[in-house]
Length: 337
Ligand SMILES: NC(=O)c1ccc[n+]([C@@H]2O[C@H](COP(=O)([O-])OP(=O)(O)OC[C@H]3O[C@@H](n4cnc5c(N)ncnc54)[C@H](OP(=O)(O)O)[C@@H]3O)[C@@H](O)[C@H]2O)c1
Image 1 (tube, protein in one colour):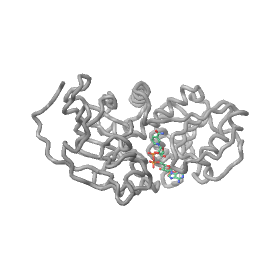
Image 2 (spheres, protein in one colour):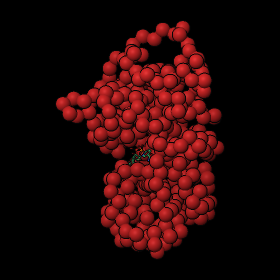
Image 3 (tube, protein in one colour):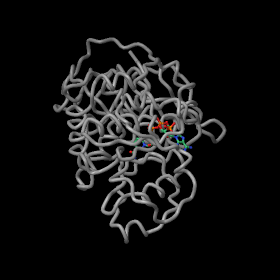
Image 4 (cartoon, helix red, strand yellow):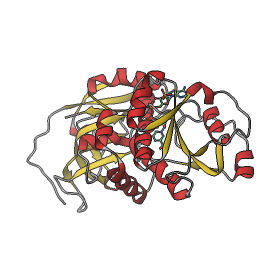
């Protein structure tokens, strides 16, 4: 057993969701180590991040926590300070993305967290803790989507245009930067014309208005996309499928526009189009390692910096409201230390 008993740890602040008259309500609380769950590894957290799911959890717009009380925050990066297992030692730098954080496991909006050893990933080489959180769940999901499309064999440089929906958001911006680095022609679907220049700077070469994809469309439409990364769901996903070229695929990871899928089988049975579902939360370690290696190899660090905003814990309530309303841009790092 590796321990570091020398460090005295006083109280610290965390964002805790509690049941208040039958509804989840988030607020800052003073915590001590004895409040934390009895897990294998104690991590001192330096950074977390803001994702759409965090917005739902903090604003109360979605029931993310499945047991209460719950410390919110689906991402964290930090340093191991105590460990009951040989695999992790004090001083090891780690990240956690998903694995039920903020749902069934206490999460990252706190200075210290006690975590299950199996949920820890070594801080990926090539990234600082702050950069790993600038990527966070949204960015690593973008990598899962691009890797999934490439594995399917439907996109290759010169193959045609690749659509990214919810383009100015966290998943969308990282997906654009990755696809552009791989040499694809990237078309951004966004509801914000004001972000066109920014999205162009990340690698988008053309734009589709969010509204053009948001309405019900024909089951089969003119074939345009070699592939697509969809973060929006609902009619947007249905239209993306209906507009994909013969043999193409859409990697679907999000529901910013709705959780329904009002689509037909026609694109699948007449054009051999694949709908690839992408989950980051319970993705096995090997898939995560591959996504992080892909990010290390292909994510332009200057673009990552340009799409990232850094805020303190205090900013969380306002940021949570903003991300749920679709008003934030790119990725948000939350500084904890
Ligand atoms: N499957 C997984 O494991 C996984 C992992 C991460 C995220 N997700 C999901 O992926 C989605 C995006 O996450 P994110 O972190 O990128 O969120 P985000 O930063 O809020 O980005 C979502 C973007 O979608 C667009 N949008 C917002 N509201 C919309 C609406 N009503 N209709 C159509 N478009 C809308 C906006 O882009 P524009 O202004 O450019 O239109 C917004 O910036 C969320 O649903 C999230 O839960 C899933």
